[in-house]
Image 1 (cartoon, rainbow, N blue to C red):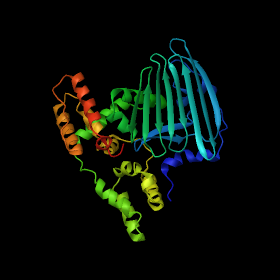
Image 2 (cartoon, rainbow, N blue to C red):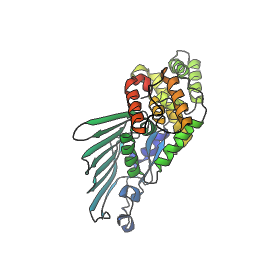
Image 3 (cartoon, one colour):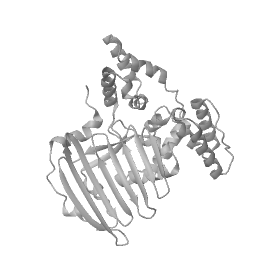
Length: 341
């Protein structure tokens, strides 16, 4: 089976040990200094195929701490640990300051999780990415908990409500501050609205997945080649298949296809748009605009995906329109909102 490029990011850690500590320059800090996670340069992050991936820059096992102060003189304490256990990579980064706490754990080659506490509001925010790439985000306050799920980072950023988007942008900005996610999201929205793409052939992909378990080896090979030829749009479809419904041959070949198509670079606007093009939540959010062309394109796409016209007054005031969009999201079943989520 071909080894996944995603897994190769962190697999090298398992066999080697970190030796060199951070230099004095790296450990020094001021109110404007980037976080220890950024300064250490042990690991870099990319959003590739809609998943947050970690790329090792400095191999091995080690631990380093840092103490600094923010602009108001409040203490900032950070700790970064890197190692492996039972064949799995473990990275732990923690940051404590007056504004709250932030903890990042890389738990295996594809999985990671973040827990953040916001002192001013008392909110607890948690994000999880599973080995298969799906993400969950929860925002808990004293009154209630809001939970969100998406096939990729882009599904959460573009298809969910503003609180989810703000929380995830803040967390990703802590992990890698040079991401200009606001600009990225605008570029993706523009790509969705302006680009003309054919509907993705889900029925055909379903037949090809079934053919992967055919008794005839040549038929299995034919289906494998056809799925690979479908390009990046097939990635989310394959990654969201229920593993319990697949036999060993199908699982093996699908892992090979996903690994063979994995990329190590950040998604561009076209790549991200291809991943979310069939998500109804994304198109419903695109209705929240004064741009008539965008509204018309989004409304048409929603009608194509769910077979009905949502009850949304596009000329309503922004607050009223957003409430109607939220109601439309609740009205559609999970299956209607997206076959991937």
